[in-house]
Length: 469
Ligand SMILES: Cc1cc2nc3c(=O)[nH]c(=O)nc-3n(C[C@H](O)[C@H](O)[C@H](O)COP(=O)(O)OP(=O)(O)OC[C@H]3O[C@@H](n4cnc5c(N)ncnc54)[C@H](O)[C@@H]3O)c2cc1C
Image (tube, rainbow, N blue to C red; front, side, top):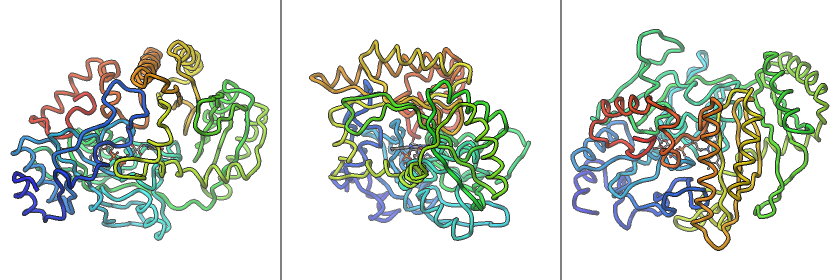
């Protein structure tokens, strides 16, 4: 233990802190790894220390210590963030929140629950299910991501249209500020009492405060959930069909519509058949039946073809499997690192006005061609405005050149989305990966955001370098 941390170890307990060679290599990087397009260094660095707080007071102690020692703090949930939001610097303390994982209360009659921020989403959902409730927020990363990380990124899951984003579910929260103050906002379904302080900590990646607990809106387990799979002849036809369904007032519990492109260098099977739609509704039996009647009318008009029920069942059963590829197979090395070692793989998730999606698709494909990057998939998820694009390039002889080519293509595509009236990222946040684009995203708002940051964290100790701060 380095001498400067011994005082902290005494206050917290020696089993709550690691320094120097005792720091596990996994804390060098979150899920923003070497296989992504970027001009940033691939490898990450070891932080000055890792601390595992057990209580809100512990967090406050660490914040005071960091301020006195001239160190910064990087909140860490499951480390599944894809933008480097939890990537440490050498002069930072990583605050791994996962020992703060208690469910503090469940109020079945009010459909609300309070939990500490380090609880893994799946564990929280399991607890809620015992009370015949469900979390609602269901990202691909549910088995590993934490409540605090989901709030920090304002993530969205499979049921995002019906249940809202993680932030939409937060009724109130507890947060530790840069000066150690513990702020508790009043959990309310609505309030018109001025500045909504809760929102300061939603989607701001731990740069304004460390979320230690939250009260959430949760949901009764629906009587019926029914998902079916379809194929639709092309993307524009499917998009038009979906737009009509949403305009009809349908609120799907699942909607995933994607076209695939042939990709010979892909390390898994690529399918370039017609685009597939996974669509589901949840609620009472009558409601689900009525939703399907409306949806089928729209699907018939688009000449959609039903796929076997097994396809939808497999889709749903395996929906979280990909996150296990981010587990370590040896210290600091994940299965994804091995699997993707010969390719640069990236994704772009923009929110666009519906009327601009096809123009964005055309431009993106042209930009990718120009940069020698292949599209793998183009689709919409949870609602027609939320658009995803996955891309790939072989590493070839020059790995740095391949990373830069993908990064340049991604930047250009994002700027195109902005010029079409969109927002550059709707699900994974900004972290360090997209920080250089924050001026394009926010315009003069970036200076305003920086003033808010300076007011709350004048010493810049909370997750500095993220979000363009
Ligand atoms: C394969 C894969 C699939 C994914 N699918 C989805 C998806 O479907 N939907 C989705 O939304 N995301 C998805 N993600 C991204 C990621 O899982 C989410 O962003 C998730 O919410 C991050 O949670 P975490 O606990 O791992 O946070 P981390 O990665 O540890 O942290 C994320 C950010 O939040 C900050 N943070 C962490 N804890 C706190 C806290 N207590 N207080 C304040 N700030 C905090 C961190 O500093 C960092 O900036 C996916 C990631 C992978 C690898």
